[in-house]
Length: 282
Length: 248
Ligand SMILES: Nc1ncnc2c1ncn2[C@@H]1O[C@H](COP(=O)(O)OP(=O)(O)O)[C@@H](O)[C@H]1O
Ligand SMILES: [Mg+2]
Image 1 (cartoon, rainbow over the protein chains, first blue to last red):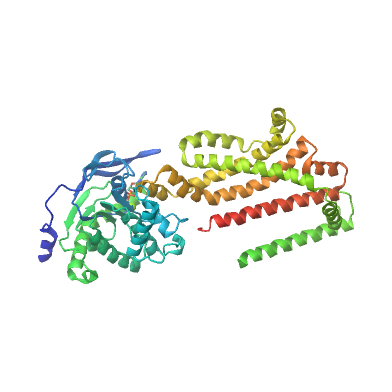
Image 2 (spheres, chains in turn blue, orange; image 1 turned 45 degrees about the vertical axis):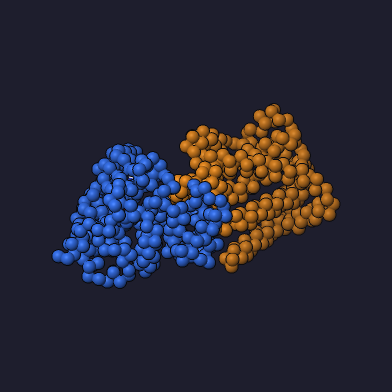
């Protein structure tokens, strides 16, 4: 019973209930396809995200999570509906939004340092300032001494740390994370989640975390939105009213297990459905 | 490294084997069109000592180098445009597709009519021989850049110029080098063919001369020189190229 309370009670330490920083209303995305019926990836998706909130988007694979995130990033435009970030309608990429990619998206021919510097392309900083900030961000994600390494000389976890440093270096208001640990092994993933938890706390930036990992969502997020099968809609939202950062011990509490299970119970129906749908389509 | 040393040894052994086979045949059944390797080698030494070949060689190499560099500039530029722009693909790309398989040598009379029998015509022929392969492989290189890097550049607001310098050019580089390497072989072909067809001058002219005089040992010696120079030029491109793509 106590658990249900944790889930439902709204945060009391909320800052003045100001207007949300991300307002997504009635978002829809339909992909035109050659020689096939148009594919609706997202339908009637509405969501407000508070300033500083870490919001998890979780759903079956192929349901439309990346599509939503790409639209918030301004890489794709909605078929209908709107996305407003910090009072401005999103019409393309912008410096107040930074993204971390599942496959890292590092330039293989540039050093870790230069990759982070590249991310500051749209800022007004001088070259010296960019380099100094890139060094500082790399140090913060634990990569001091690896500035001159090419991506191929870095492990997967280190590559994603570079990706994170690159995103944080622009001081974004909104951090967009697309399965940032999806390509990593379980141990590296756990380590990075701990670091991410601390970093998100320090930075205080509003975060959209796309994941298919329930424990990752429960560990890192203030709120978890479970999506349906494609086309993605909101199936259920869970608030997790446990102060962040939660500390690694949190993973071994019964509370954690219970929360993960609750998310899973919600997600399960869609995952099974999506598998059978895949079989029918295949 | 050890694997490339092995490759070199196997290649060298194959070469020796072929040479031995040739020698055997030439010794058993002597004929004017199959001189022994020794006879060819003697001609080679003679040319080197006497130095009569040098002017012709330099003249031909100038055509080849000029044509190659012009083709490289044009091919890389148009390849990059084809690689990133739909319009570029539909215009230049279409042109390249149609003309890359056209028999280049058949264009020689037209070129001669327009440019005469001088160096300009021969350089133009070299350009035509190498341009297409450079353009096509550069375009393939540009298209091979992962869409994730395009997305990343867009999210972080990279300007077109920055994208060009830091993403497009380095990302296309491996295929540009492949194209240049293949083009180098074609440049030698084109340069010598131009002289054979247009004017009895330069290295190609000398080949024509010895061929006409049935001096096949000299002809083979010249072919050997051309092959060695081609191979060496390609090796230089590989070596320089490897330095440029150390990140792979
Ligand atoms: N550019 C596109 N064109 C056509 N279909 C697409 C495109 N991008 C994504 N899709 C489809 O939209 C659906 C949702 O994709 P995505 O958002 O990547 O799912 P996920 O939730 O796994 O991130 C998938 O079925 C995918 O095949
Ligand atoms: Mg995805």
